[in-house]
Amino acid sequence: MSAVIDTTSPLARDVLRRRTFAIISHPDAGKTTLTEKLLLFGGAIQMAGTVKARKSSRHATSDWMEVEKQRGISVTSSVMQFDYAEHTVNLLDTPGHSDFSEDTYRVLTAVDAAVMVIDAAKGVEAQTIKLLEVCRLRNTPIITFVNKMDREVRNPIETLEEIESVLKIQCAPITWPIGMGKTFRGVFHLLNDRLMRFTAGEERKTDAEEIIEGLDNPKLTELYPQEIEAARSEVDLIRSASSPFDLQEFLSGKQTPVFFGSGINNFGVQEVLQALIDWAPPPKPRDAGVREVQPTEPKFSGFVFKIQANMDPKHRDRIAFFRVCAGRYTPGMKVQHVREKREMKLGNALTFMANERVKSEDAVAGDIIGIHNHGQLQIGDTLTEGEILGFKGIPYFAPEMFRSVRARDPIKAKQLQKGLQELGEEGAIQVLEANFGNTMLLGAVGQLQFEIVAHRLQTEYKVDAIYESSGIYTARWLTFPSDNLRKEFEREQAANMGKDVDENPVFLSGNKYNLQLTQERWEPKGVGFHATREHGQRLSHI
Image 1 (tube, rainbow, N blue to C red):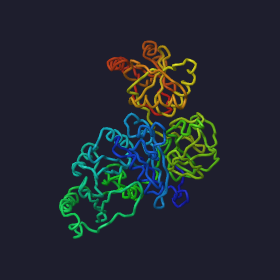
Image 2 (cartoon, helix red, strand yellow):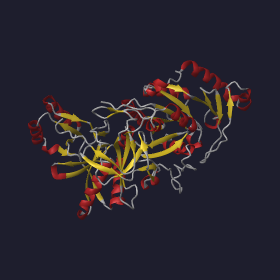
Image 3 (cartoon, helix red, strand yellow):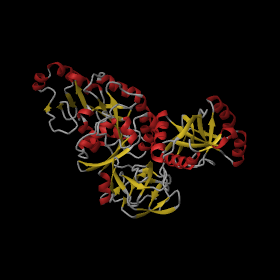
């Protein structure tokens, strides 16, 4: 039975002030830059990091791993909390690179909204399509930021049409660009009927943006005789042809408000931040298996969606990133670890500004806290104040690339095992064990994952390993309707069997025809071949 909820309580008031969102995009669309600029406008930092100048002493606040600084890309998700306009904002920056899409998918289970960044020159790209599909599974509300308008880009009407046709989401333009590239003059706010003039910005926030009321203002004709006529006719067309903004359509994930600007120049960013405050939903109810948990319930509950090893290499620590779904965290509180059926104490939870940590004294639904983890917490774990709940939907995907791995120095085999176990629990890579020859296998979505894991094994665990081609094409998790059928299958397919970190049986196929033939033979008998599973899920007897 659901708890009786007092919507006027201090807890409810605090929950309604929360906004928790992720930024998603294809690589190089400007996602990390936008993250920096949102932090800048939110007052969380005084100067944005130079994302592209890799030799610079400054790096993006959200890119804290050494390997990220070297490569100038995000390979892990970061969490940043700051206050803005009497709200507490939890911003999750995600890896844009498709090789790290699993980390992004997991982060998307922990947010209530997303900002989608589109490169105005390139339009909708492959990774954006994938990420939007994941958002659609949860009907996540999406705000769109069309970035890089200070460059030579495509016609913005074409960009809107492409978003609608490819991503199957209705666009409601909120701002409209005046010119582009060298003749980019600013954006016109369709709801407020005012033009914000563009001046090339810098790393610091300035208040020099000039606002001119009304698109018919004669001053605009004087300032921009070339661009303003085209802009007036485009705005007329957009107002008559596009859908007006509808809050309910946005909240249900069917419509996206669209903003244009230039993240690198701080332009158009504040409007996105304000839209998140005004329109994005506060924390929503969550499916916890046995019932739906309301965010304003007094009893504490939530789930682990990410594990990060070695955030501070000096202390060899592991942090569990935990989304609070209900109740209030207080230091030293005791909670039930549902999977392990035991009590644990939450001593010194943390809030984050990328890798800077502050001891958390208070957290409510929507907040992300870090829990020191000595191996007791895994991705997908639920913690509650006593009730047996299980929050749904944190996915593992079948790997698409495989490598066998062994320590170059056999004496370091145990160190390799420990490093792989921790990196596997973190979700940086999938670790499988093939029954045939007891070979350790790494499974990844993309080549870059192998490179990052090799780098981290060497620097964080001091293990030099040998990586070799495995001859495996794909993997599928298996479920069996009975023990007898499982034994029969394992006997016949012994050379193709393996297991994952949770001891789930895995079928390792050398090619797609082998997978096809095996499925055709065994699926009619009730054997399930699964391309995804939920974290912590034991599949053997489903």
